[in-house]
Length: 490
Image (cartoon, rainbow, N blue to C red):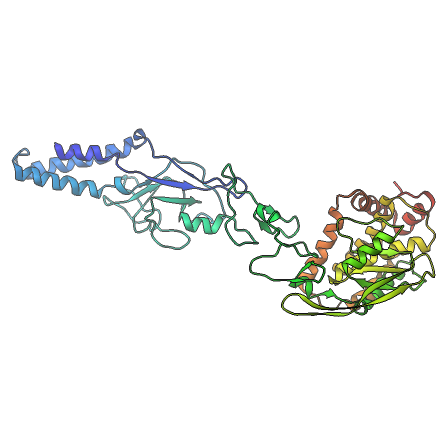
């Protein structure tokens, strides 16, 4: 029959294309091609059998064979169109079965087809029988058209392309919003590279994800925590061009007088380790230019490039120190207050200089580092290699940070000195810590991470060797060995 032939020819009509996505690292996105005709064999046979049954029932009811007059042909064609529209062919999203990506949505809908013993189709969403109406068949499950909804927005899916995850359907746009990584800096979707893979950078500690282009387009970083400035945040611009995020600004130390209480805490920390510095060494907070000038004129010392943030001086000279807290307006420094300070040589160390505007914990770790340089010189230690001198100074900075960010009972200070000295140091400093924000605690952990992950020969390898020696032999025995041999004990 011509109308039956029309049904058969319509079986391989339009097939919607599904889409499935992978993880961030190997995210490619692709369209699955239409299923070949032979994969529709069972489905086609079932629809053909039903069409023949309907035809026979019609003939039996009429008591005669199909006639070929014009009116009967018109009725047959109308019936064929009605049956074809009732079938699934023009609306079935079909894709090649494959392993669905898993994003932790749980087993809301199983992946296997829902077939009861009689062969009727069961909707994967409402669990109701589909019968002979229109339905969707995708990923081994059947759906009423009104039940085939996006798992994210709960709106029906009428798009010719969609995404599946854990057996759940999504609009392409909804799936992208949920799973395509966004840049934490520009807030846009991270683009794919030349081979279609999503490629991004991430900070090793803060895990801030960003487009690779931000490493080349001049996007500023905080001079303290190293995070990039996002489009929805503001950084303070210091007078020397450095930028400081507002979280780091909360605990920043901006002038020399403001830093003196912290200086006393560091001195007490050294006293608790039986390493008291007898001489009164001036501590000055300075601008970047003054620090660089002092570094160029200093004969001694090893400097951590490209950014030096502290130095222990042994020369007589005039230094421009930051005397009062700068005036801030409109996210920038609008007025600096400096005055000259003449350094006079009374001993091997004339002053400790530290860059102004850094958070308290970073300023303290730099001060603990530079104070160890001063202690070594004042105690008459011989000229040491950069790995040994900078390494033991980094150990002292790390120990001080540990005493600040974790409890005394869990601190490694106890392994570096007597437990009594460690307890007295912890109690004296903890009384001055006060309550700190969660960010400041995280910031302290980050500064420890910086010391531990440094890859430079002097600061990085030196710290690893020094920390290993102090952990094994204690701080006092390690220092005695350095005095005698100029090297760390093995």
